[in-house]
Image (cartoon, rainbow, N blue to C red):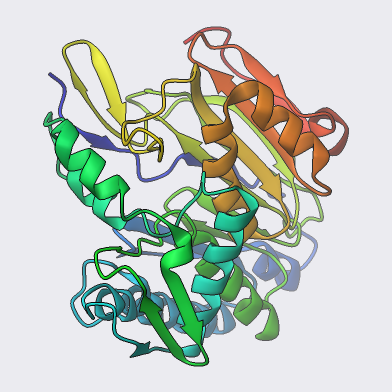
Amino acid sequence: MKKIREILSTILIITMILPLFSCSNASVEADTPHSRTGLFFDTVITVTLYGDSAKASKRLDAVFKMAEKYDNMFSATKGKSDISRINNAAGQPVRVHRETIQIIRDAVEYSKKSDGIFDLTVGDLSDLWDFKNNTGTVPDRQALNQALKHVDYRNVEIDGSYVCLKDPDSRIDLGGIAKGFIADKIKKKLEKMGAKSGIINLGGNVLLIGNRPDGKPYTVGIQRPFSDDGTALFTLQARDMSIVTSGTYQRYFEKNGRIYHHILNLSTGYPYNNGLDSVTIITKKSTKADALSTTVFAMGLKKGLEYVNSLKGVEAVFVKTNGEIIKSYNVDRLYKYTKLKKNY
């Protein structure tokens, strides 16, 4: 039985092939990357900015203050967070921060659009599996059935600055949308502070700011599923976009030859077994990419591909369990796609 693995950077390679020589010190300074890494949202986050070191340092200070603030608001495991207070309020209204209202509204909206395939009230079910720490325990069927009774986004009620759960046993878990929401907030802040080029990587949820300093697109590598060494399966060249992957290999354990992963079927309570290893979404907003990556994976290849092709400004790359790669209509037209490995 394999120990559970959490791949902290699903999107693992972001290469910036910068000029080796420059005509001026100013140009060299503009191309200089400044990165900072921290641990938030139960994952590793890294933000890279370019240009003047003093300005980059000030911007990174602001970014990591935001990360800490949002971690303390949205975490379902920190007792004083907005989400924990809502979950523990026994159905009573709880006054929360403006950003918490915003992210809950967004999560409810994506729950509605997906007809409950994506659902922010998955907390009890997620807790039963506990993929962060679980090394091989499959929850009891009766316990799963009981948890599923309380998964229903319609239990969330918002009134001004107050949120309550009409079913006191429902529990909100924003894990399927929080990193995307926070990435969008961070990008907006950085652009307001004057940042022109950069990469926001929240545990594999990547959001690109503009172009590379040389004006070319970034090259983003997507991990080969179940690769122990972080090998990339394919790369995409993109600019000013969000690229988010949901995959079976990110949080999982193996028992009796079967892989149990963190993307849960809200009809059965068990992980999906639909022939997919991953779905990568490319779109402008990271909140949307985050929510859609889970939703589209859950739909499976046929319905998921049809759904993506019906959406404006959204593209996807599907990786099947047999290693076959399927792309939505415009991936090759809009992004330079390069497959790096023939087989798993």
